[in-house]
Length: 534
Image (cartoon, rainbow, N blue to C red; front, top):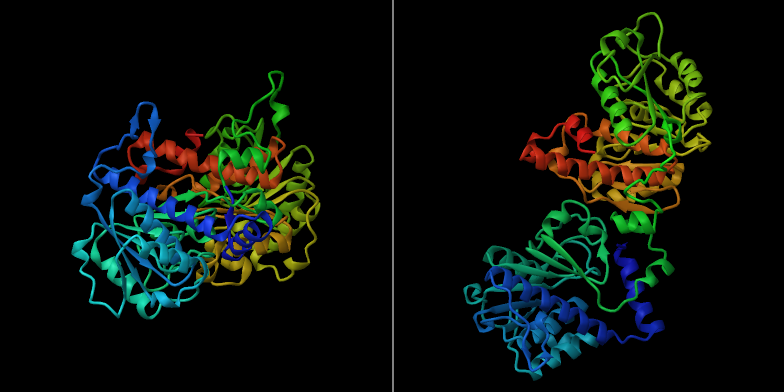
């Protein structure tokens, strides 16, 4: 599923009208009908009834626009002066056709409307739909209505709602009525998901044509309620022509855009060497479990072999914790922590391994940036960098001068680590997660996994993928180490950095969902449960 910016949506809309030849009024009519259909579906669900399609003597009616006892409903359509308001007016007509009582409340004098919005205004008036204007007519008594359609501000709006728009949004939120937003909730930034005050709080958002970026990222994803994307006739093939390279991560996207089968089929004549050998570098006296979790997850993700390199002092205490793993000392002299000179030992081990996962439980130590630089320059295998290895990377002053590694590199920061990598505040990172991830990935030619709710996978070629699997219960210690191991295990099986990162994040989220189902509550999930649920 394509995910677009507001600028891309405007270009797609204009190209459909000017080049493809579909009239703007036809697109608006389709949008209005889609909104009305979703309103009626919401009404049916609320009544706990499912209206059957009208059928008589083999002639079938449009069930999407049928509602039993439609006269019991009275919906208030809040309309702005732009195209979003035109969509609302079109929706009002279709609701009226279904038997629902409707009233149009404009934020500005209807006489100021132009283009298709004016045509829809006139069509509504010709059908006798009541039209009122905020500030001109008497105040609205919301107790007279059963629901509200928010068609005030669309993707072209910017900044906080003001004047009549702000007042109407606040009144709608205060009414306690179910709200359905057209395209995006008024007051929500369509590109970043940030919320202005006031912002409409719908139970349902009917997103028109293509999913907007702001509906995929928090806090917008939560504020929008349930999101339904409805086609209105804009060809999806235009997205590729217009350079839309952001996608919602689904099995179809994994197969079609990334060329990965989520089932990871195996050859019947394969053996452990066929599926790669991961070297995990991590663990220290107080964080040995992180390296163990990552190593076990790499095995569960399908790697044929996994070796865990850890400080020599931890070798005996960790022996037998996972009999499927091979353990090897990464340091000498019985140390419990890492040192810069350990890079020599790791590079020697990499000569017979296929993937390097470095960082889980690594800790910070003198010269860790130089340690990482040697692995980057000389490792010659795909590499995933996480946790304290990311912190080491953020401490070097010349990373912008590091040449792209010879093989795929995947970075997996959480927002705090991303802040340190970029020099932005955490709030700035979170304000535009997709933009921040893409910029870093393209600038440094790495695959970047920006973790958190709705994890973003950004590729060095400018593509981005937004994950929706998982839940809040996965915010638990060690979950990120498990993700590192999963991605490493997929890299070992021959996937590219972007393929492994996208599939790994998706699998990680699904494992969280399965683990929660087994435990009975999302809060009961711990990192080890994720491994067992893979």
